Image (cartoon, rainbow, N blue to C red; front, top):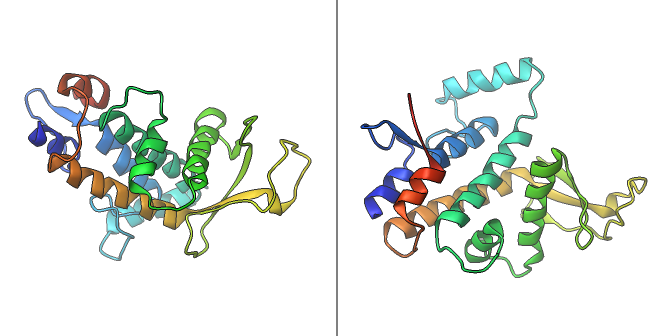
Length: 215
């Protein structure tokens, strides 16, 4: 099983040749890296050596898609969800993203983890940056500024009123730090899984849900 998991989480795909099987987890991660301007194989920030990715990024800008990181962040959130569904399966209905963050995101305030779940819901369900929940409504801002935070919680809770434009109600996500967090979580989950520190769902279930056969 450890060998199978290693192949599932390896950037070298396809993971099997007969039949040619590819990890959907890695398809999603590589897409996130491309859209967010990261090295596709390592997740590191781009350098001048990453000519192909830089050319694609330039083409995206020319087509008016310079904010492709918007979709890339969604892919990174889906990655967290995939990891939470595959590893350490829970008998409860605990949110898969929250489960991974609770284990691997070392923050004193759990509101940050719940906030990232809310960001996923906003992007996935509405295609936008508002999570209109009765309990935790959020207006998100994606920031490319430098910070020592991943999430900056609002000074005032948003009241679900779209006419309320106060910046004090904004929840700020610092994009680069968020990406670094998810990349770090992926590396740690991969290491723990290969070392046998994590349990996982059945191999056949993983193949059915998280791989595709090419051709």
